[in-house]
Image (tube, rainbow, N blue to C red; front, side, top):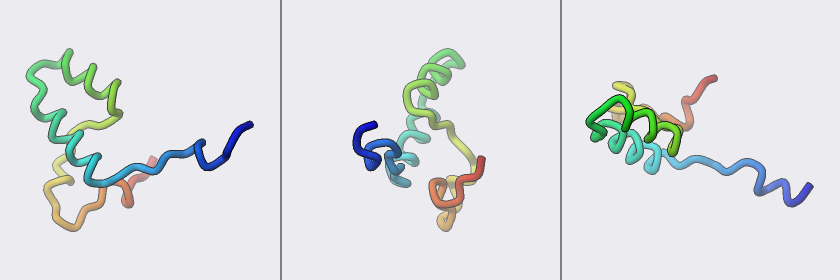
Amino acid sequence: MGDMEDWFVGRDSNEHLQNALGWQQCNSDASRKRFVKQTGVRWSELLRLPYFDSIRFHYR
């Protein structure tokens, strides 16, 4: 089974924000779809809020 510490990799809020900004820079739907497939991140207007932590407040 391996080392359980490697099973779940924590996400970083700053990295998530940088990826979301990268998603904004995509100039077509196709490039945005590829970007999401690679990073798992899309832009959200909530990211503009200074108190919003997209990783901490994540809900599925």
